[in-house]
Length: 259
Ligand SMILES: Cc1cc2nc3c(=O)[nH]c(=O)nc-3n(C[C@H](O)[C@H](O)[C@H](O)COP(=O)(O)OP(=O)(O)OC[C@H]3O[C@@H](n4cnc5c(N)ncnc54)[C@H](O)[C@@H]3O)c2cc1C
Image 1 (tube, helix red, strand yellow):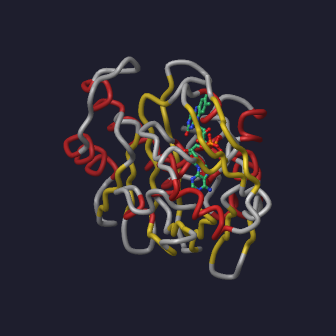
Image 2 (tube, rainbow, N blue to C red):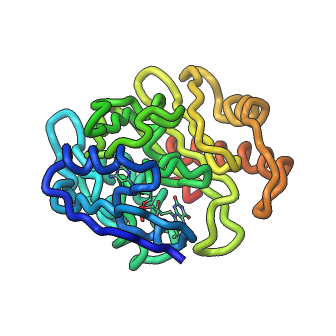
Image 3 (cartoon, rainbow, N blue to C red):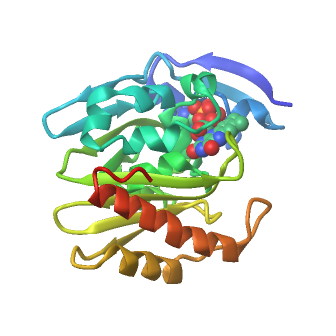
């Protein structure tokens, strides 16, 4: 059971950051969907909901997304999803149900760096910068390597670039976590392929535009390290890397492809 000794609604991000540093068990509260399932003791739960935006603002060069933005807002934002051909919508739409997606936040989803995360997998395929209160701007490729520990995610910026993108995942049953997920983006210079839930944290790979989708999928199958857990064996995941990558690439190459 989760136990919270003290709840503080911070007056400023400086105060919240200071509280966070005081004890390694102090926690920033996102939507609390994950936290509330845990068996742990939190000395100070820090509520920054009045200080962090829950909105997506479209700018000329990109999308500014507040840390308190819900997964449901990501799923339903018309401009963001029109720009990425629903890739972000597809990455979150199967996460449990609308009620959970209305509560779970982008900040909590990214900060947790879950190996299974569909959200992290999708954002890693985009030109994403994660902003922290203390560390400032961190490219998402560095963020997945562990930058920004014990800091506050304030917002995320996704740069608008000419791309076609798609997301594919496999779940053993609806609402379960992904056995494997793949996000693909074709930009003007490269194919960005992201594979997550291996079951380790998502990782990005680059491929040249002159490679065929079969070549990319085969190369990924060879490169991506998979392991076994209760959702699938390493060998099964390897096969899924190939199948999901091929489906995602087909989806971005053929508008009519149903996946
Ligand atoms: C039953 C269940 C099923 C799920 N299935 C999936 C799934 O299929 N795919 C998927 O991708 N995800 C899934 N998730 C994860 C979910 O999408 C969210 O990622 C998760 O709930 C964390 O978001 P939150 O807002 O609830 O964070 P919280 O639970 O509030 O916080 C999680 C962690 O992040 C920290 N944190 C929160 N906000 C910030 C911030 N702004 N700055 C710094 N640290 C912060 C907290 O201190 C805590 O350590 C599932 C979750 C649950 C409970």
